[in-house]
Image: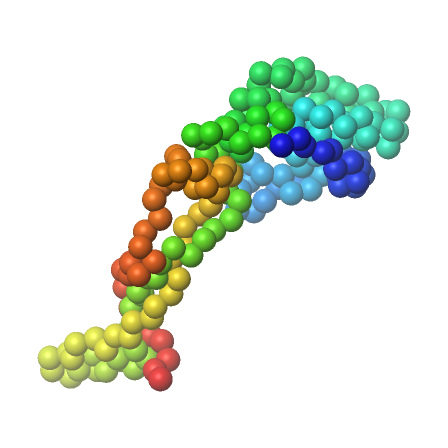
Length: 201
């Protein structure tokens, strides 16, 4: 299956990169090494462009949007970060992350490590203590009485499994390919026992 370069989307991305490269870097509060804005965000995004044609298109589109001084900084920092980019390295990254070739074809027998979605595979049961049950047991304990058993309510919820790049292509193969077999849809997974109170009814 031949890939087509989405120049419209890549052009818009290049505009965002050019704007952000002139701004100070800001990082995620939960993942301090992950940039969410500014110069470092641009560099991290470019590192993650694993198709050679996309990478080259975006880099070329960014440069005319930068002033002379900023362009010198861009050339210097990109050279230090990830150039030259060898075709073999790009191919390895595509296989590792997306389980595809540089041409966009799925690699039989391989599943990538990039999460692309989730699917409901069965149900799971989660138990909660009813509202008031914890208080009644505490009152009995404080009164020197034998506390009653917890009053528990069980809730059935969907059990979801992650879907990784290349997994659907593997499942389409005879025998499911390299994908793990899906559980019986009638399977009931036991969830955590949550002892915080919930509303009765």
